[in-house]
Amino acid sequence: MATEIRVPTLGESVTEATIGRWFKKAGEAVAVDEPLVELETDKVTVEVPAPVAGVLSEIKAKDGDTVAVGALLGSIAEGAGGKAAPKAAPAKATAETAKPAASAPEKPAAAAPAVRQQREAIDWQHSRL
Image 1: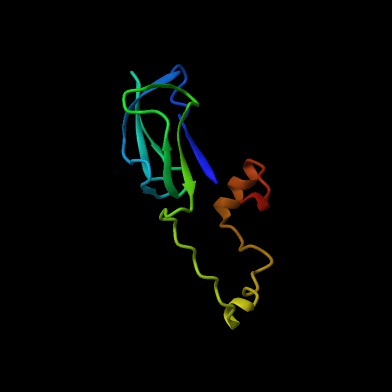
Image 2: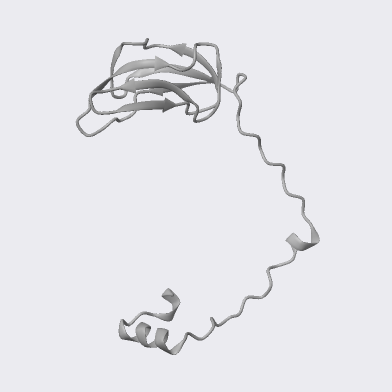
């Protein structure tokens, strides 16, 4: 499945940007959040990150092109050789993790007198602390 790369919202009054340069070429592997392309406006220069890991399958806008906010820049073929973050191995159940947590005190510790006075002065309920 291909994921589209689009021009993000760049600012309140910014409606278009110019492609500064692509950091990757079509066919190259990309990781999640890896910068793909640099967009330039009169107010800001921003790097557009990869939304998913995969292979940059298509570039629609070339260096120097002017693109509107929301315009299609290219697409990424997911899971086709990209460096995705490694998944954590499932935790093994042990006797320690199977036991319920140590019984927590049912009543919170008594507050210091100064704290009690402040709490009462501003009418806070003890459960909010």
